[in-house]
Length: 70
Image 1: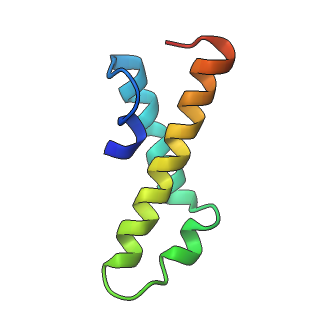
Image 2: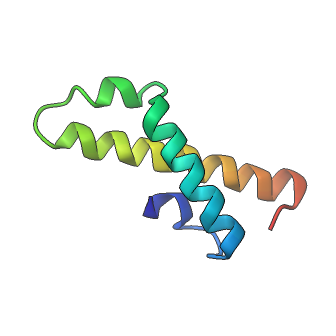
């Protein structure tokens, strides 16, 4: 979850959207998150979460850049 807001200003709307998007991507597990979950031990779970956080960060950064969303 931290990765999804790491490079963004931590405002209420950003934090809320980051949390919702992170949970969505963590549940849906789009590629390559689904494949990463198969890594041995707890590494797969951590990599899966990092990918979900990265997807959330990219979506929010795109919203901020393209439409000026705070």
